[in-house]
Every structure is written in structure tokens, then in C-alpha cells.
Image (cartoon, rainbow, N blue to C red; front, side, top):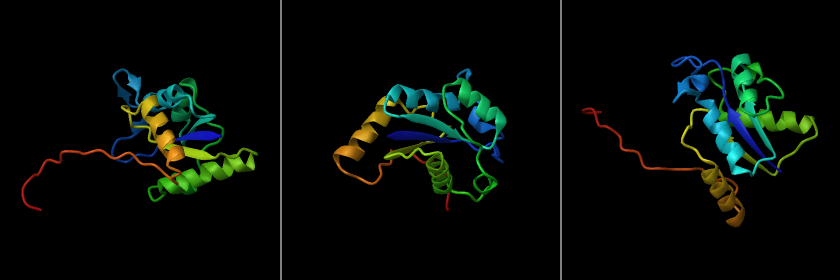
Length: 145
């Protein structure tokens, strides 16, 4: 069984509620949920959040929010790994275990179902522990460092 975990904390300091800000007339988190659905490889698509509004939008887009994120994983110091561990532990306590977990960030509007399928194919065929996308990025140089 495979799970997609979309990590969407509500407490962003720089851009409040960035995970549900409109991007091309839709809350940005909807793109990640849609990609996970289109991939057709996940038994569960869930959003880990501490925010009721994010949870409502996620559910209306077709994701599960079976529990709210704990205070320990909702602060500025919690890592993505902390969040993923918490989610998998909570599902395990509910009697559900997963062979593969895919972390999708809620502010990734260009992720596609095809890219997620390709990642799972690589993971399985090459018998890897994990797969991470990497791309080149042109960095603007602004003077001396």
C-alpha cells in the first residue's frame, strides 16, 4: 500500500496561509492533491495540517485529514521527517501500514501525476530506499558574497 502525505502547516511566518493562497484562481495545495489523485498509485492521499481552514480545503479537494498535526510537529523547529514519522505512526495506531510513503509539498503546483508515477517506478525497479527530484536552477548573483 502507498500513501501520499502532503505537509501543510498553517503557521507560516513569512507568508501566512501560503498553502491555501490562490495560484491561478485555485488554492495552491489543490495542485498537489490533484497530482496525487492523477498518479493513481496511492491508496491514501492525506494532508497533515494543524489548521482547520487548510483541512477543509484539502478535504473538499479530495484528500483525507483523519487527524490534526500535533503541537510537536506544528512548530518552527519540526522537520519534514518529524511530520512523516508522526503520520505513519498515527496510521499504524489505526491499523494501517504502508509499504511506500511519498511526501508532496503543498506549494508544488508543477508536480504532476506522471512525475509521481515515474518516481515510484524508479523506487521499485531500482530497489531504492528513497527517490528525490532534483533540477537545475539558475541562481541570480547579486554582488560579492
